[in-house]
Length: 580
Image (cartoon, rainbow, N blue to C red; front, side, top):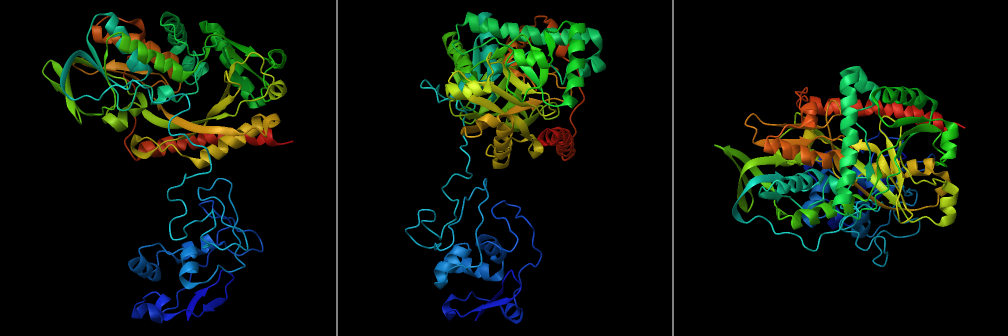
């Protein structure tokens, strides 16, 4: 007789054939196996929720049975994990009728069959094979996640990887905005350039971002003024403005068709707590000459912004563009300029040998006089460098299906500006040329050791979905078609990081803190000046000795504490907004 305790507390007995009983030791036979008695109100995995008056779902009870002596014996005999489904099939039984499965909206395993349906019927499309893991070979969550962003597709002229040994005047590691812009600037000076990319150009953050072209610099203008004073704050604002103008010139000079709309970006105030910071920022902007203006309620209604925007501020310069088309246009320009491009090539080591720098890859090597590191958030994890200067954060984005004309009429948004909110962890939204709405940010993740956090984050996707429904209640029936994400490189002072090593042969440009379209493009000309030994006022402005990040685990604890603190501030604001 097989005994086990039902969640209700009474002992259930079932007569089973002797051959079906798992092997047990003498000590185990003297002991009646008892499951864990403490019950949580909600399962941590999110698969099942215990409702009042209901017993535990079948899969929750199956998890209690795993990792026991009997389960190990079953694994030795059959090679399969013993779940509620396998017990039902092996013993010819069905799950107890009092156990009812409860579907969670974002769990990766989806819904179990309802009452009256056998878990082991071969004609059940939901469970075609009950002896295998339910999520094996399936998408790990119910959200339409893309490993690569919808902005990009693999290029037809993908360049070969580096084979053998080659030489160049300058080598660049990283095929994003910074690396491609640096390669173009160096080729204009007549140097031979070799660019190495571990995937294909634009597959990193350059092809995954939201597409906002902004003159944003630092955490905010009042913080810059408090830490650096009026003179240097004005210089930093001038750098951000020059970065936007430089990017616009690149788009015109290279004739890049990237759907650029110079409509500016709006910082949206949603709550009364957002008003004082925006007003202070507008006063500082007027003091240092930044094109940043406060918008009161009448100005917001005159611009026909979405209803969730109560007041705000406008960054007059910049706008938004298609990041995939932009980076692919830079890639075509680099190839036409004669740059040696090696894709699918990962750098395994970097060494200085006398007056030259030697790069090793899995299939070859590269000698150069100067090296430029343009890997941004990927630098600590892929190259093992700059771990004490920058750290990567994972940011998730989404886009909806195309909206109809009637739906756009309900939303408003006549000028189609980019919008990001005045939260500590901001939310960003912008319209796309094909009628969709793009949104994201808000939820960021940091992985221990500055590794790249995993892409598929169902809890983050659920948060973004709920966020979109709250900000656009008139679009509650509009489906979200894609989720994706990328990594941004953060610094302690929220300023980009430029410089070189002691030999001036390894140059680095990174740390754009989520504002990389303009700043990374402008960084190309700055890095080229560093390589050529030319004086650049912007390099001198940002070339500094900043405080290093602490080692692990203190870095992880510090980042988590900071994100938690900022999240609580935003949660208080959002809670007040949800009140009637």
